[in-house]
Length: 450
Image (tube, rainbow, N blue to C red; front, side, top):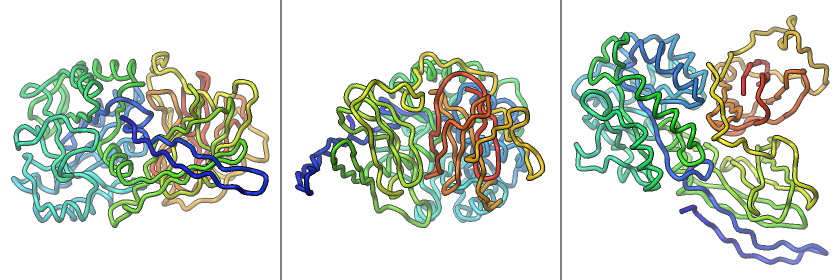
């Protein structure tokens, strides 16, 4: 059930009137019916060589929990973070209990991995919950193993675990389940959140992650099903789903209208020392518009109109969301239309990678856009290091770690098709026809295939 805030106010303002609006905050991102997170423990070499590329192929991202002292491939995991995966803590030493390592493991990983929003998820070695207070002071969420092993449900509900230091994840592989499809179907049917816990993969280089190996083919079957049913199941890293739930539960949405303009105020007050909680929430607002532009601050948001509602993702506490338009013909701009998840065709890689550029080199190669609006503003190199640009399973170009930075999207003719600015943790910036696009974030350019 979507959270529905009906806000009643009819105020006279000169010759215009502001009417009540129905604002709905989706239970799950994209108004999907359930959520799933894939988590991987121990920082195995196969996570870099086999796991991440498989998820990238289908446009999904996972959570990879590394052990600091087991000498993980920091360069490989760093590149995964730049491609949108979540790198999280699995302690320093993988002892029986990580008490005393909650903060230090987080700090050690943060010194190796560039993630704009840091290390917000921890998975406990041997499923043993350490100092809960220390976990809460350092992380958004702490993960155990099968909930049923500790008198918890294996499937979390729409409001997450009853204890955010004890989020469940069902074991996969030889001592667990390989039915990824079936468990995601249950999440859709129950409106819940299922998380998977995988170590190494069968017949791969797993390093120390030898417990309960899982066939990659089983994971791929699950990802294929998820992509075919992307309108129903939201697959996202554990930390991202946790942020969404906490924000949604705390958020307040207020909407008013004047003529053909609707203004939405989306706020919460749960910012703490761990996170700003600025993951975008999915909203819809009742409207009789047939064409609309949605903006928040200086950013233009991806939106669509369907069934008498305008749909968009907004970031809490990032400024007023303004919906403007008219009652004209049905919009033809691809930025106002969502791609059908059932028609997405997976490419071998959703991201070709960043295009290296300098002031003396044309970053677009042969495309050579001429528009004066392509001039990029300077940005702090440290901020740019955490930027990731990739294709999602529902065929959007998504940018993470770009808060405050200018973003420009070019088509393969070098024409500017979208200019916006980064808001929160992640942001959908464009969806359109199949092809290659360049995305300029600050002074850094990425090539992305839809």
